[in-house]
Length: 299
Image (cartoon, rainbow, N blue to C red):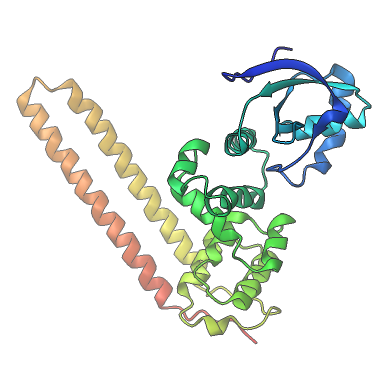
């Protein structure tokens, strides 16, 4: 198969597999996926060449394709189809990172370490530049890098997929490491969602109430009622938005009829005001109901 990657300076060539090196890879843990890939390559062959560059030492270094390389080596390949490109350390790292993100093959902490390396460790570029290159938001990059500041035991829970990365990010407002560890364990034991965790962290006014690891958080009796009311209000707001959108479509049909146009605009503006009011009421009601409950962690 012809290479899918194009580069201003690239050569397609079969290279002795023993002359190819695995260094500075974005991905750290991919071993569990190799047996399946080995089986696939054994049946249909290598469908896409790997991407390599010639490093400063004159060796062929993998830019993209470490899993394919590992699988082919396990199968006893003597040579591998490669696209050889001219790329410095920064460009090679960017290509590898973008390729892995597009394939959704990176674990959250692998992404986080790659982002930190690019922005902080090497100083190759700022957060905005990186966000633009990998197609992620500024806050996505920042929050992933911040994950690496969580306690080691929390990172272990993320690595083992017991704790979702987005849920772990809800721990950021807690500044005490031991408290973060305690809450993380309660999240896992209680199977809390990100929303549940946010509710607890935002509502607890004294973080010292978080207590010990063995505690079980008891949601207030009215918590389910709060969530039900919140969902109902959100649904009502959605219906209002749909109605406003449909009136907007009708308005477009009557631009030449001043009387109808003005009448419909009044209705559309009224819906817009109603949506704003409903949003404020929803926020106030949920806040008041949450505040009326004393959230406690029993001993």
